[in-house]
Amino acid sequence: MEEKTRFDKVILSVVVLIGAVFIGISSFSVFKNNSSMQQASTASLATLKTKKADVPVNGICGSANEKVFESSPSANLCSTGNASVVILEENDLGKFYMWQCLGINNGITASCRATANIKETSKKVDAKCGDSDGTKIASLPSSQTKYCEIGNYVKGDCSIPIYDSENKEWKSTCSWSCVGVNGGGEVKCSATLVK
Image (cartoon, rainbow, N blue to C red; front, side, top):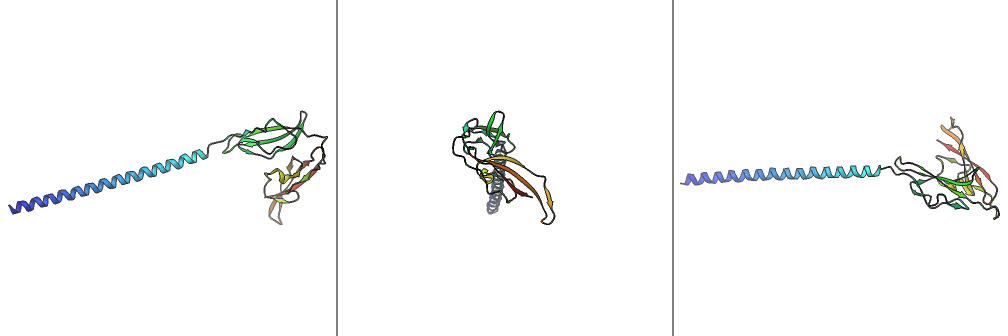
């Protein structure tokens, strides 16, 4: 009778041990699966954010488009996209302020314009070059005031780059014009583009 009781205790101990091992394996499996699911969820969220950030955004002209201005507009140029520098252009149809709304992430760029109604009867103000005039620049300015402190910016061009062996750099002369307000004097400006 005593031997049977001892045998029963041994059997019970083995059953308890097997149960504990099974529970441990099951718990580890659940933890591992949860961890894998969290990692997959995090990776999916990161991918989604990346894709969202890379979505192309087309440039769209703002409310200043097709309006009439006596001086260069600076507000409401673009509803979406990044506004370029506003330039004054003249053709057979008249004088216009021109700019672009640059698309984001390879989005389409929109061309915009407004009518320039420059009154000749008002006080004339001569144009004056901006801070970039006569300086060395690493890139073309994005602000109109860098081109013209006073007056309207008229786009010019840059010369063919020439290599400066002494300073080991490429140099190109970029020129533009600033047109006076209300028929004021026009000035020529330039800067050295260095690469």
